[in-house]
Image 1 (spheres, rainbow, N blue to C red):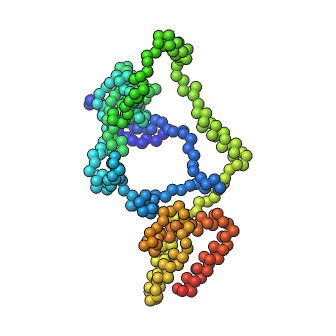
Image 2 (image 1 turned 120 degrees about the horizontal axis):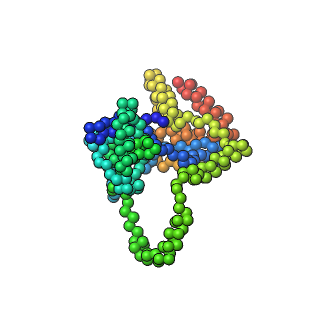
Image 3 (image 1 turned 90 degrees about the horizontal axis):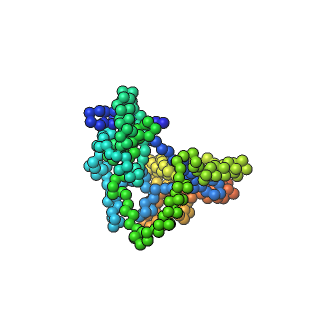
Length: 329
């Protein structure tokens, strides 16, 4: 494991230097969305919901949406005014009985490992919590935000568990439960008998993720049977094509201007291919000239994948355009 945080647990005048490790990891099965025809991964673009244009990372800001749908945009200056805490201290506020902490309040779990200089006070705090059957309610700053948490003992190791804020726990207001009649004595007695019959100690080894095992078996069977799509090398991203095309366009325009020629032809050549991407929102007529070449390049690649027979024809057209460009230059 790799430590994700270093700091110290402080209670009274005692300070215990510790390292923080994530105590859990997810083994949930996740599937990728792919093209059923060739197994290629599906990519997503950052598109503005208002103008339909793709948005660069540099132009993305944080926005807070109000309950009535208003969007408040916050810039770096706004965010810098928010209270932030980068303290490296796990401060013990009080020690409380373990049964006072509702498990629903607990969130993410971390292991605490003592530094060599803190072995003795670490063991002292651990043993004191174990003997008293208490938890330490603490505050800790993770990712600049202060959050409440508890310290408890698990297998001779101190565990830090962050907690939900009280207003994050929903109120289960189910009116139908108020109309349920109390259980009859014989029903309650039979239910208690069932509980006694199924009583036992919890053993994690008795439970198995049969879904994950079945998925792995299914995938292995398809691999053995040759039912697999060999993903081809990914084509360059549309962003790279746009940069290259723009650079070429500017270079040709600069050369023409230096010769005293009209650079307008360059723009006409760049816009010669029609836009075939039906999934993009329609553009306004006034913005056609400034339309990004990205869509055209992407459309060309899409057509070449779907119609291999047209590759030669497309190549000939491309060669003809290059020859024309050389002659005009």
